[in-house]
Image 1 (cartoon, rainbow, N blue to C red):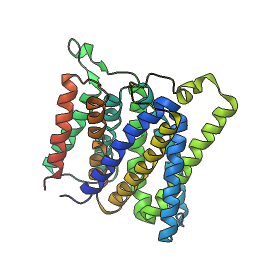
Image 2 (cartoon, helix red, strand yellow; image 1 turned 30 degrees about the horizontal axis):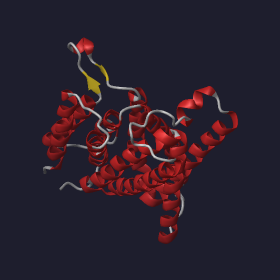
Image 3 (tube, rainbow, N blue to C red; image 1 turned 120 degrees about the vertical axis):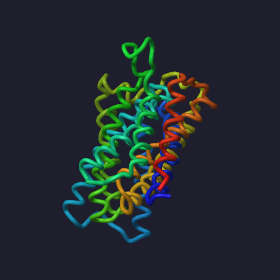
Length: 302
């Protein structure tokens, strides 16, 4: 197994489960409160971990600035992503966001001078195509091609932000270590989300309704507020565990393979959405899922 693939897959499993729990919480409480709870839980976990390991924020000013900056980028990614999960079908939103894995491969090769074997490049292309197929539907040829479901536009924004986050964090992590950078990033992430929440609670502009309203039909996944808040907290813990695995992978392996393998989390989300919540996939989307699996196999081969 190539170095970094295992860390990426651990992150994928955690993040796919986070998608499910974030959907449960968001459709009951609203996406902004859920992100705030999740980021508070994840920050607490990282703070405790840093304390037990004797770690602190990066001492290098450049690494510190980068970790804080990408924490703000992460806040934007989570806010748009969790809003997309609240208003769109999980079986579509999660795979569309996962296209960041393919973009990460391209960015890592172009910007970081990383290299792939021919088989790995084929696997990366196949997996990326699979992710794209899960997010579009074909009706009457190419002219009838359209994005599937609500929330996919927000998913595309989140995808771009997660790509920037993946490629950008590699440099400070390798310069200052993964734990100090994750600590700085999570601190800025949580602070940004909670500041946004405070502003919304104070002023409640109409445009914030999409972030605060959890009244949409939850398609049978929502329980009471306590259950939703618990789901949000567990989502935050799983998210940060995935982030730790992801950061360790970036520290020891090529950025492209960690970024790509970590994007396979939608397999978990799609299984739950289809088998438990009754969401339906079109034939092209099933083909896309097969492409993701085949791409993973190709990437894993030496």
